[in-house]
Image (cartoon, rainbow, N blue to C red; front, side, top):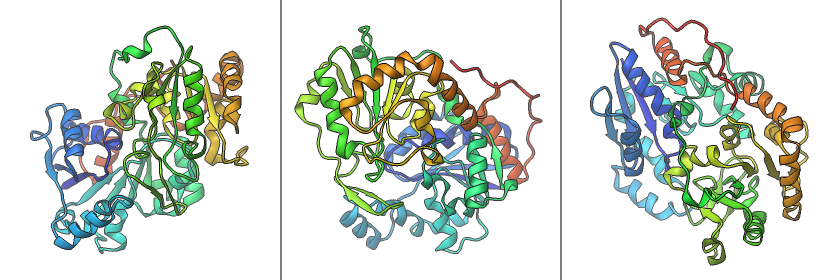
Length: 401
């Protein structure tokens, strides 16, 4: 039995969602070869960093690349706009994928191995990445996987109801990324001066994100209100390329540049895609979350705190499950209302918003005292027909912070 874990992205944000499962599988499964495949040096370094010494011991690490000259030329010509390498790596490494019995992935692109390249015998397990509400997380492609690991009943129920996934192909396993939280939080020196800390975390998709139309107004607000600290840590792909192209609704836009007045503001910490943007360091440190549709809000709600959401697109969001997280704080359409909304979110948090946040979190994450990665590894092992140690007795859910 040969099980592969693939990390195929420009950034490292998906690694924490499924690498812990590979590590747990290496500890508990017998009679299986586990291969972790990366497609660039950035991903390789992150796998080694999180691997805890198992890389090269209990797990084999391989780095896949483009092998055909035509692929390299096409990637070089289009990479500023489109992730061509991400797609071409499949056709250039079919022998590797054919060597696997099971492939575990955090994204949906790998389904091309079945739909285009005819690898019908390869079983693909989807770990997903994040527990958000966006419609793209529940499109018909989700039904193409042989098994899906989900964080909680919200994801399971929407997959069954909206995409037709067979309930027997779904395992609720919790959230392996939470297993990686450090015992002691670390902070940036900027954020230790007693002023409240807001995390502004806009999404990358132009048709949903607040950044393109309102983002600089947000930064201006904090420049003018230096009694507040701001962490500006957008989706790691927002500034990764000169242009942003989205496939769920075809649109091309540019994130632009960060002006000097923001870079020099002493109360603003800007992180456009470092590792810290993917480790939950910011979601755990901030006192208030300001965003739009990013699933990171659910990681923030591990410890319920005030939230504010920007609806500059003026969506009719009430009752729409794709904006379910907007129930956890005030929603504004104009940055001019930001100060009042932040005050409202803080003043009414315990009475109004905290109960809603806890309910949303509990729907999204099924957490117990058993590590989620162990639960996920057991699900993969059972799907593969491998022996696995008996599960622990039922454990209580983790309490909210």
